[in-house]
Image 1: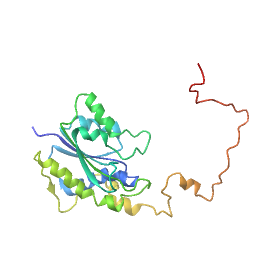
Image 2: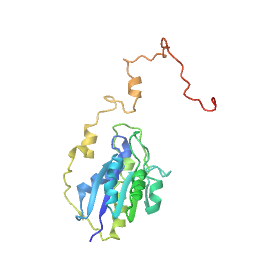
Image 3: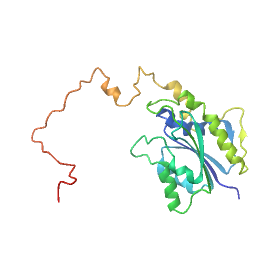
Image 4: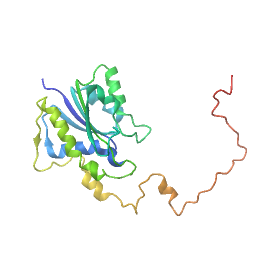
Length: 225
């Protein structure tokens, strides 16, 4: 029986280089055809919803933006027990479960893939809401894929390179469309809450004391027996 192989991209395309893993998977889906035992998955920020892919995989390859502490746009690969220490450059929301938790949960349930490869890139830009990959990181998509394919050769995985790119199952996620349809910085501020503060329609005032208000001591450490 053939090994069950999962190629998984994780991240958030709305925050610039945080979308690297998703864009690598997009490139794989467009330009390669794999055998039936290989799944190419856009994991997004689904967190624990991805655990079934991990539980069913013999070989897991993860693509992600990772803070290795290396120069921006550096591609770096780790294997097996090294992987859980490094996943994820940044959590972009409070409800987003880090993939370390997914791997740990799979281990508690009695199965982790026999072989795990993390192919990560050191992000150059994260604080750009609605942004695409920075140019330097975008250039690392194909090098990241080469890392993964070289690793998979040991397991007799030899995908077919497609001369004419396939149409994505969900074309709205196509990076070309994403970049073309993106509003300009003049049309849509990209730096989070500052878009509110920069508006001419907003006046910032000091908070006013509420009538009949009460004071609540929420930091009671060491103050009461």
